[in-house]
Image 1: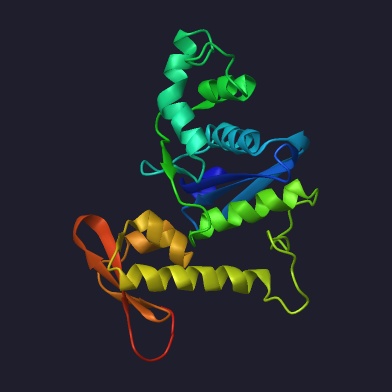
Image 2: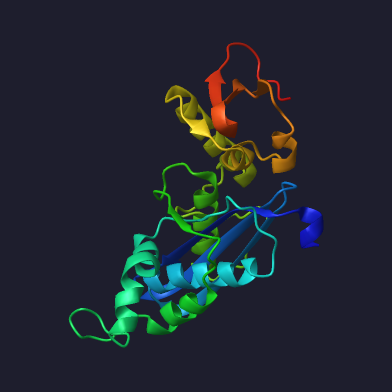
Length: 243
């Protein structure tokens, strides 16, 4: 099945906890070249937010090990604890016998050791600011929160950090609005996107985007090619047809 979906082009994780310590959940998301998405998560009745961040990354890395991966793939997370731990702190912990610089046992040592075994050399971690409008970060946050409340993952999910009101917009519409708001900011700042990032934003297969070489329209924006295989959004006047 993974071969039919193509390579993994995007991955994201998040953790959530009510009370810290308290009931917790974690969420993970994987995007494939054909545009399909795989989502999963889990629940712990008594845990911490940091443990949920680590558990999410561990589960995702273990899943990625069995899948074909795009060379530009990164694991996107809003946890600096996870990034600093794997990237900076772990080498020192291991030299000191899993002790901190103060000589105390490393917290969450079981998960850190499992992550050390599960890490993939070709999948670096990249930081994304939480609640900044990043579609995949927002999605895994909702998955994690749903699981922290003891709710099984649904598609689309109905759980958010805030209680949903009776007149709340459907989840799919909320996701679309998040993507449109992000597109507006990207266009206003003249930011460029890689093909992988663009595929996430417009929710189109990466292979389809890689076949394009000239400007094309996505909703209210013109998507223009720039150097080194990158793309830039430009606001257009008029209708919002998609091509």
